[in-house]
Image (cartoon, rainbow, N blue to C red; front, side, top):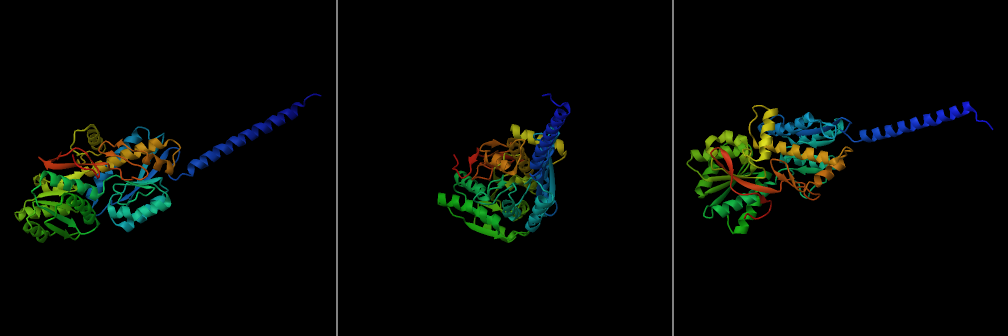
Length: 399
């Protein structure tokens, strides 16, 4: 029996149309799946940051932003990550925790960011960790004062107690006859530092000759300084903001009191050098980050790139924190692959067990979401911080 040519053409046409429709459905489904991941398109990854763009701590957040922005701009200039450019939008919290939470909610719920990369400050970070955990949105902050590790929140800097512990060890080991006093801001900052201080003192059988607190916002430290002096303190370990510590140091000098001052990583900041000038020499501090004046390859590259994108920017420790965060972000996004999801980003961060961010070594795991893995002690000499120790594992003993 002969074949009907018209019927055959009709059948082929139906098959072809069905195939085209099926392909269209598959493409549409694939596109819908890609669009289902907030903040991720074929050409862009949308990130958010929320920290003080105004107010009294802008002197810290501006260099932080410059460091982070440098990495973002460099990556975009080279084509992005797996063909996607990074877009980083910011919200101003003026260092007020309530505004931090409001800003984070706006970024996640209205702007639909993929992740929050860019947060600075202990109280402000604490304000948004519960929210990002509930929303299942990755957060990377300069610091993460939360233990045990949350699932979605990560931080870069060491805990204050993990900085003050090796600093106190260093003082006890290298200055065994010196009398130690504690001078601190009377809040969580001071109390967290006290944990590391107390641990080192207990291990060595030492005790403080003075314990002097002050309220946040205080500018007059004469009474506190006299208490430290009258107690016979040779070394004063200080916890507080850079302006407060610098002001106390200047007022102590004016009263003829010249102890050795020691503090956490804020001692490396440009504002400390600006406020103290040549009087900064002798200040010791513990930092999880290499000195911004270091000639290491990673620090040289960081300084060169920041100067390229922000001509005239100050050579600041805080800018290196932002730069380090940016390097970690880029590495984790690249490791997550083209099929990017929030959970894949978290998994990539958790897998960074030994990563050199250029300005500091970091290590993450599912149970360790604070990147800093070691600390180095520095002393200001000749207008630059000079290393006094090798890298000390956090929580470990100094050799």
